[in-house]
Length: 582
Image (tube, rainbow, N blue to C red; front, side):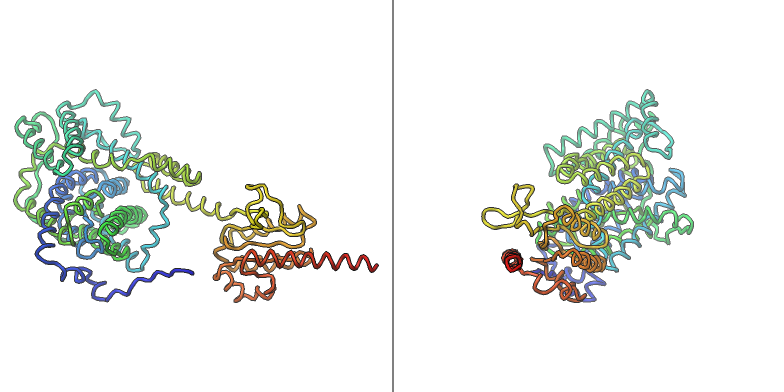
């Protein structure tokens, strides 16, 4: 029996304003839990947002702006109660890589295009959500995604080397060339910068290992900022965060450039998909742990609106953060109000505490980024994909190396992986398994090759076709049946065990009609058994049941074997009787 999963209809008011569904359930207990969770996440989000702004190639305050209004919008219009929206490493890298092909790093034009990217990628997500196309995310296979994430994590980490070493190098259009430039200029390393960077990295690792409940990132930022101020790190040639504008972000229309927008559309689409993949993985985990429902289409809308809010408040593209969402959930978040409280603390920081961040060394931000992406590197998943299916392993490996080769245009790497996985999928389905079946000692049909079994009968050949009969593989099915006839002149009955056939399209119907005509001329009978109800329905609608013969379509293998054997024996008896009379 097929199980049809239907989601209950969502009232229009709840679709337009999702927070209306959960706000009435807030009480004193949940409010306290959300407040604690929100403050805990904010203590991590503030330093991370500064670091991810550096990764995106924009001033640090862009990260703070993206941690204010977009966080509130994402919480109010999303569907996952504990999802923490804001700047994330992967989206930041994709943004920088996409924009650097259009404008030079550190220019007002570059900053304008980053804001425009937030707008375009947000529009894509809203459009996908409204069109209920959240299911399209499933077309991005897991091996391809892991290959991309592993490569991107390495690129993100290596991209922090200039800041860690205190080197001021120009960015080229090829990431590997930039890495070589770092190696060439390593003799010019600014030792205080290296000390701050490596020291921060070691401290972050120690905090993660021994005191994971403490906001280690914030503690490291406080310590290093104080040391930078005390020892005159900036005066000695070090690079610090510098002046962060105090107060609310200015709300304005994003700068729109038609020609640039056309060039940015493919990258904006990739950012929309990849950033939502991160949000989706977090939302799934939250749904399992809290036993709550979530709607991928509503989350697409919520994440899209958050990106657009970032564009209107001089921010950078945002996404659902895996690490901060996990922290939010672990801290006891009960609803989206936890993210609202987190955003309020960011607002307080913007209003009163930005001068305290002036002396924060940029090598420390590089260390924060490196620490965040180390957990993304997981070579074992690629090995597992290879063991499970060689084609999946190939897709993961090709995506990995393509992403490295195309860097900084890493969106081309994942597009390569997607195209390759689709091609490999088509190749797989074009030649599905056609298993020749034999009969075992219990009379059951099993793979003749694997179990070394004899044929069902000298005049009967049984096969199983493991795949959908559609336009890409109908010729392979037809060729397989013809091959059986050509290699076995004694065969007069072919039984197709159809429990592996899960679909039949118009090309499959036409092929069966032609095949039946050919078999009729060769005096070979084609029979089916164990057909799925959906396939049987297609046969009935197209008149193929009459063409095949109702008596040649059996509900079970046992009935098919018994009936066909009886037919063969009767035919043999008739032939013998005719010979005796003659």
